[in-house]
View: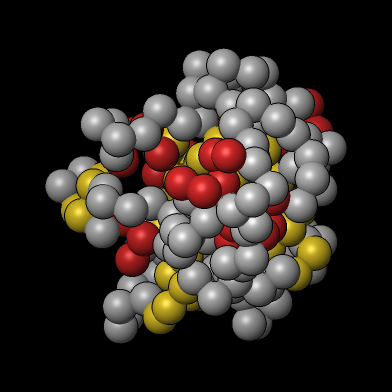
Length: 182
């Protein structure tokens, strides 16, 4: 996997999100934040995650969507259950994925992180294909951004523990680190 000079991953389907902006000057990403998402909650497949990240989610398509359809959120990459990749924001820009957050005393994690969404839920095991794709994406990011190391790969719950629980106990951290080391 390669990252273009403009910050797009060559193996990802591009689906640009308006929910991003410029990182603070001289700030390169040095943290990866792993999230879990399913829309509606607990359901996989369908166009709803892309619709949320592109501000086109139909509030009448599901009762839950009425509570989130106006949220302006995004991630850099979505990894579907089959391992396929969709990219919403170039890596050099700030995606709006972390919200109020802190890592090692540094707040505003969106400023210096890359957000990767895995299609899933906290208590559902993630798929083999997702781990494989995730490891490939992270390796490409580590080559491009040397500040990203295995110790700087965290869950959303690690940077916003009072608000978030994802990627949850269904995510196998040891498996990811084994794949990254191989």
